[in-house]
Image (cartoon, rainbow, N blue to C red; front, side, top):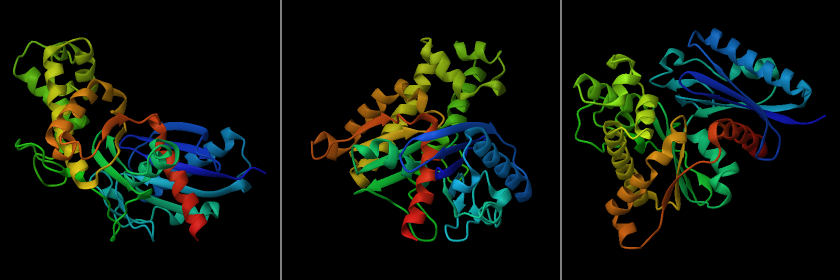
Length: 324
């Protein structure tokens, strides 16, 4: 009987399920959309996804050793309850792990969706090459993870590095964290869409206007990237602005942690090639440790694609079993 683990990774609109064994590779992967609901409804969705994993992969259910879960929220690591999250406050106070443990009779661990993919990157990605790096989860939000000397940073009180909410702009755009001008609100999917919406509303000549049918409310980040890829000057200016802000954030990361690499993962990571040159240029020009040659760092895109979160979830439960 083959022993295996299941990883679950919740995003804002999609949830990924995967199966892995002892090695850092996936044996099964699927991605589904989900709808927020009550704790009972969310658990039913998780049960259905796990059962589908086991059924379609033809693993014997008796071989399941543990389940790891990544969620976009602060999680009580001991109790498995949701503490707070701007997109997951509907589950605040509910135990995510207990009903799953009771159903499958195996250890279940849960953590925030910045710590979890950092574990995945350490285990299966850039961590194979270096033991000091920073991870940026770039999608609907901007999460961060840090590995120093081979150890993923996790702080007391269920906290974690959060410099994605550093203020890198004088703009007064409100962020979901309660501050204004954060990197998170300026450079992620909703922020990029807002840059595009403002361009359309102002009547600027741009392909974005055609892609949204001249309706600013329909502009999304993907339209901005698509327009930029076709040489649209307005879209390219937006991405240049986004890249400069990301570069400033990366400069702060180098000043604080001196990582060897900074790695993009997440829903927008596939577009990172359109901004990496400017991100690296800005970082190097803004950080005295770099331009004086006292340290070196490169911003890159992860090679794990959609898999960093589920790999990290699997790794999280492996480590729990190993250390118990």
